[in-house]
Length: 556
Image 1: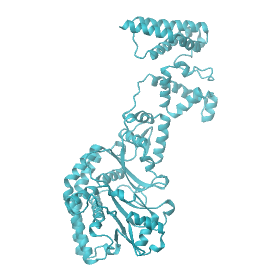
Image 2: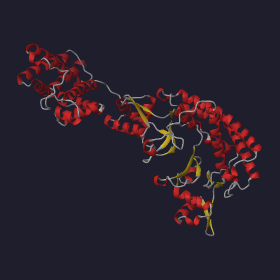
Image 3: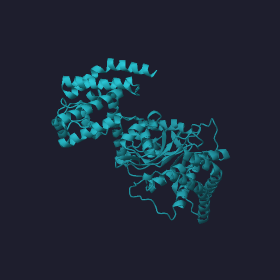
Image 4: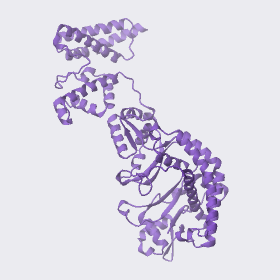
């Protein structure tokens, strides 16, 4: 069987390689007679090895490796005969004009090694790759390359020599792309703050390539070359993506390695955190409802017109319960941080988040895909000002958006400034000053209703000066109930922080602010309280409930 294989390889060699070998030798010797002698020597070595039973794994690579080895031996023998050729061998690079040089593609001589050459060029650093392409592909001289790159000719020659060595070493390697190259993962994000002028960070966070680059660098800080292999993208494109991600402050470059600049919480940690929350949410929800109901009772008794009366109390409770839940969230952080050194705030903006390029002020935490049991997500959206509206008076309109039974699909994802301003005018009885088309659109969404030419809101409106508890006894009991809820939630916060700290990469261990931001977001329990409140019957919701104003509120 082996003899048959070797016989077939001998036939293949004589039919397909002899002519190529001759031109290979002629290019290097520059002499027909010497080329013929060298070709005969190489062929003899190859046929002898095959006749002896050698079966190479990659026939083409094996043939050209023998050819190079025999040429190297030929150079050494010639050097002994002629001192003038002493500095020329296989390991060095003659750098005359391109026509005089031993071109890499000529040395490889077409075939499968040419594809290896292209592969290695794709994973070569730009400083070397650009010189290789200019010299070998664009046929530029060393002098011209040096001039265009503001380098000395010696530096260009050194880089060409180094690039040649890197290419040869790489072509002998069995490179393997990483898992993310053929099985990209998804990450979801929680982003807090004000976006940049160009939509940062979502312009990056919504792209699968950027997600997987950041995920790979988070798990293992890597060079551009390593990330290119892991994600399966040629280095020129990877370098461009990395420059953009570093410029957007989503990644950092530490010497020659790239690191992701925020936390990505693993699916395993999310699973443990969700299970822990499910265990204490009945007790937590009961305590939050108790604190809320006492506060509402005090307001009703001491200041009954603390709200506008535009929505039933059953409808108002959706926003009020989430506001009380957020109050508990803040109380937990105050309890935990009492007596602790506060994280540095020097790089924070007016909204309390990290200042970013292009006028942004935001922080982000990533979540690996987790398909297990988790509470519904509850976000909080407000009025969105365009850049030219940033200096206009703020409108305190917000809406909790419940990703529960499709509730969040019934209202717009964001509220434009002009719409929120119109809502404020309706609340203040000044709708006549607003665009009729805007008012009609708000009516279609369900935010307002029209009767007799007069518009009225259909959501919770709270008056700030009437919501504060003024009686000292009421305030004291309210504080006791708030603390009771916070102490239950604190148990969960400590558990979340423990899970986060177990996963902290070395390059983020000193960033206390980002640790706290990650903990605060993975710790959020609005969704669990929402579901438990519905299960307990405190919030009423039917499958066919068409109320669009769940969670909407304005404070004036």
